[in-house]
Amino acid sequence: MASESSITTSGYIKHHLQNLTYGEKQVETAAGIWEPTGELGFATTGQEAAQMGFWAINVDTMLLSIVLGTMMMWFFRSVAKTISTGVPSPVQNFAEMIIEFINDTVRGSFTGGKNDLVAPLALTIFVWIFLMNLMDLLPVDILPLAVAQGAVFLFDADPHNVFFKVVPSTDPNATMGMALVVFGLMLYYSFKVKGTGGFLGELALEPFGKWALPVNLVLETVTLLAKPFSLGLRLFGNMYAGEMVFILIATMYGAGLMLGSVAGLLQVAWAIFHILIITLQAFIFMVLTVVYIDMAHQHH
Amino acid sequence: MDMGLVYIAGAMMIGLGALGAAIGVGLLGGRFLEAAARQPELVPMLRTNFFLVAGLVDAVPMIAVGLAMYVLFAVAG
Image (tube, rainbow over all chains, first blue to last red; front, side, top):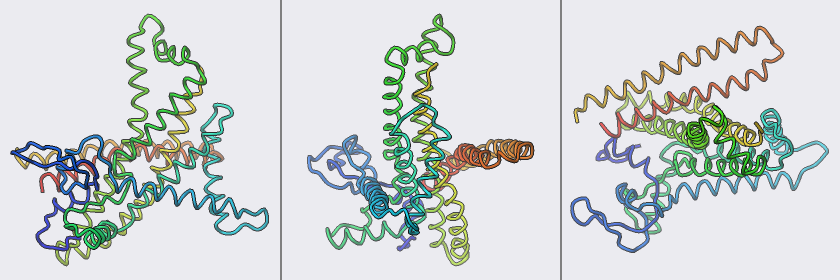
């Protein structure tokens, strides 16, 4: 919500879509020329964050995704430690429900023989992405305002310069990172199951036979690279769009009584619809991961 | 740049994305109902796959809506 009237709508949106970036501080010297200062610190503007380059860290994404991942592991571990064969506790029922759901899905999609990695991987991906997407359902200003107040209190920072992007999966770095891990596993199993020759042969000889080798190579390489790319971008795009709509609804609260009263209804409606989207996207990411690793196991 | 073009671009993104997804979901839902009527015992499996493909199709217009909103309100606004 726009707490001060001087904040414009586009400024508010951009502030919300900016990651809290930590890296080498940059200064704008002449018109448009940025130079590194050699100190480490948080970026205070969006341009500075963009200038920090490759080695900058999006602290909010890292922090939230690691915290959520730790919560997930703690939850399943605590259930596993107190598991009983008698009457299960409600928590145990809940965990068993999730695990059975994943188990059924993996059994339905994975046909590549014995593999101890795929089902735990699918469980991790599903629950972790679901939790990261779930941050979308928090009202958009709660965590950013809390972090800004904390930063003002602890470090005497300017609250306008403290960025905080709440949903880790609206950061392409997070989603593409996960897609890259899946891609690495695809390559690993392709080489392991088919052998180097088998995999390269599949890349080079597959659709049109050996006389069209360059065409095959180009086609198959594009197909291979498109898989992790679309996997990561689909999750990012959906979450980014959803978050964008939430932010726009939040700007309506500052736009007078008429729009503000509609905004509450809109926010509830979009949040309920979004419960479907976040679950579906986590599910799709998981199923496609299993299918891709399954395809890596298939001999042709 | 003429700001009017930005609004046209946003409208086209939302409109064309919605058009394609509407056709896709229409076909998908129709086929799902046909298959469910023919073999009702397959409905649980079909429903899972229906939601999976609906999510894949739904992603495209949602991404278009998000980008269009960004263009309309953050770039032009």
